[in-house]
Length: 286
Image (cartoon, one colour):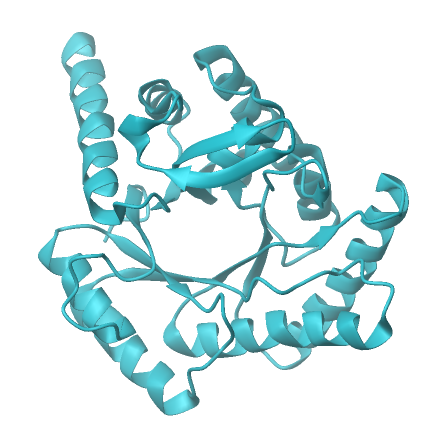
């Protein structure tokens, strides 16, 4: 699988998978001719080292790139010391087992502001991630922690916050969830706005930011408090054709993980749109 490609895949095992195991999901991804899959550890890391070895073997055999979504219950701005430790442990275990599966990128929802200022929340999240990346390096766990852009104003995870953490801390890179970015204020849903987002990524992180992207895409229902739920792309107002156009023009590399209710259908549809744009651009040049 060429690292120059933009890979398309699903958040979790495809809906059409027979059985629920990660290995079955990887095999189904290959049958569908998709490229990657995100292991969903969202309810907890329930895979052991033996299971991880089977997943690694399957991903190598089927040539499917893997990433991990860490458990949902994480708040690196918790005022309770025990809850903060538990949050760090959940990310650590997701990274440790994920790396044994061959998954380098570990996506997580970082924090809630609660009663803290944005500045204080950032400081606390930054300190926690410094500690965690140091631990992972010392144990030679090959993992990149990817705080996700979040869809509610109550959640830490604006584009600027995630990019700042990535620029500041070695071993941290962003996960850009475009439906979250859109749902947060009902904006960021047009060609110029997508262009501005990628330009900002490149400005803060350099070319590496564009050549090593991890993205989540879905339709989204939202209101004054931000994200409500994920939707099928065609049932939403999300402007996915223009996003694909911008990703093509920036020559983006990395992964597009679909999180819509029809995972593989939307993943295949997006890749088809992206490929057609690619063909059109190349044809026009020639």
